[in-house]
Length: 285
Image (cartoon, rainbow, N blue to C red; front, top):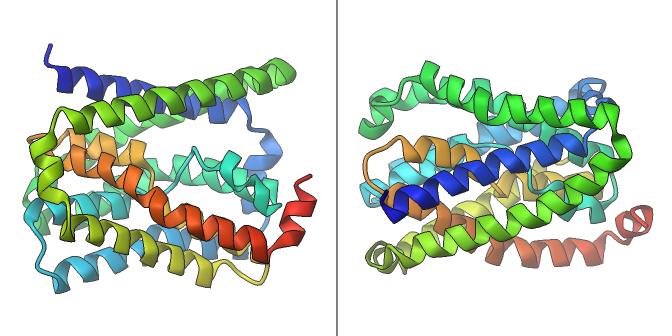
């Protein structure tokens, strides 16, 4: 089997394991938090699922970008939700909001991603080849089943589940990073081609998404910070599922490059918010 195929399979497996780990560390009240606050949920989901994708589509129409970069931006834009974020965002205080946002967004991706594909397929050749129903089925198997399985295990063994979740998250982080770097190393010509304006475009998308979440995060500065980072960190697992179904490895490599490059934009923002929202730091202790 080709090395690229092995790396892609490993990345997909690590994402499923990640979702399982999030489920292990989730409680029923985490899932209910946003549903019991419809105003907060509506504002958060509009920012993630509507405003950020529309912003990317406007950028694609206005800027003359290479076709593969256009496709990567569109795939990332419609891939809302970031299950790896809860641990990073606990410093901002409202744990229930952060975890609930990660769970709800991962589950809603099963519906929203196929809906965007159906809407955008006629405008983008490679997206047009994807069957939204098939993508929905793949996302259901990749996200819904691991999430429900993890939550079921947590229901029976909550203490053991929390410890296992910690170990799995660390393990998955290492495996995902190693595979991502290996994928980039095996496609150096593609990496070389995206240095410069393409990387700046991806960084600009991350910065714009940060701004959307920050502005729409509401009056609580901690929630504002959490939504900003969640909007900026797109669901790489969802994006990988879509990109892997398109011909050639270039889109996948761009998405992996985005996952690594976006940290250069997000980390300074998190450090800044950590300084200006000391109350969030105190509540999380």
